[in-house]
Image (cartoon, rainbow, N blue to C red):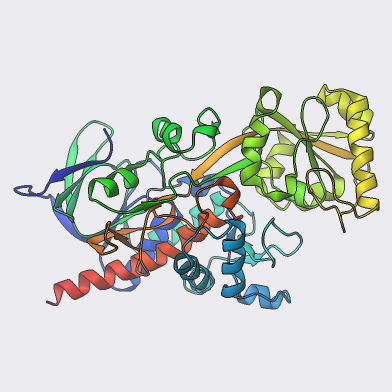
Length: 470
């Protein structure tokens, strides 16, 4: 059973730590580093044998405005411009204060991680993501989430911060809304009780909980879940049990380009640089350029829930900067052919239909035209041999709704007042994507993990220090 709140009265804790963090993904690790810097003792609790979380499954790209890497690349950007892009993509749904909070915090956080902990970020400057008016995606050399979490874990270990793995938090102990500690269940069934001064929920959303997905995102109830299986909604359920405010629980990030059956994320650069998606009949079915999140449901509506992403060698060259794409090629998931007919033969679809689709795309690009789905091909380079294609499906990556937090990442109750000592970051907190998949701007997930992680860690450490001084 998840989401349990137990009475703290009479409970004896084995030990007590000023700041406890539940979850060892990017949000949890950054929260731990930030709290540690403010001289708070920190304990990170991770249910898995190795901290990875949803971060390791991502492309590891973090959108940030006004960074030194952008300036070095001649890219003009600002938190205000970024915030406007976030709100525009979500059609005005997110709270402007919440958007401004993370848009302003994320750039300084990346520079802090680089300067203090040696994370070698750089900006992706050779293609743009849908909805971003500036090139502001930042990543590590491999452009992979695995490298991001590995480096964060290394920083935490080097700082001497305790990380307890295979430590599944199965209940919170509370006096009213005040959290006193946590119950940890080990793989052998043994139970430990750890007290805390402040608790940071960094255990993501509920994407791995089928019942909650069916309730809040029914259109993706049967979709491939591409997030971490540990994302069972613990933070959401604990928060609700403590009378916290939640918002936009139907919000989520989907992805319309997961190689099938390989199960590897195929970068959306394959689309933004001029590629298209066709179904098993060789026909396009949408404006692919709107965004990869909303594309997930559209792909799943196609026969057998399958589509093909079609592009060319020029685009493949851009995509190879991503470790995931290189893996997909190594596994043989990326088909290659010198003609549409040969490509169709390998895809086992109708050759005439695919040829007609590609001819239409070539015409639209030559004419700088807009198709019947509303996709504008102005400035898009033609596809030329050799062609490439990947068989893909739609997937649910993670949820975006969650616990509403304030400027210190404190969880708020129904009256808008902060709960005494509870904080949330990343997928545990309400994101900035609104209530629909279409509101997800590329990178919004790691945006709130990174920005709110640092905010929560700093605020929690400050609060427990103030409490101890009283």
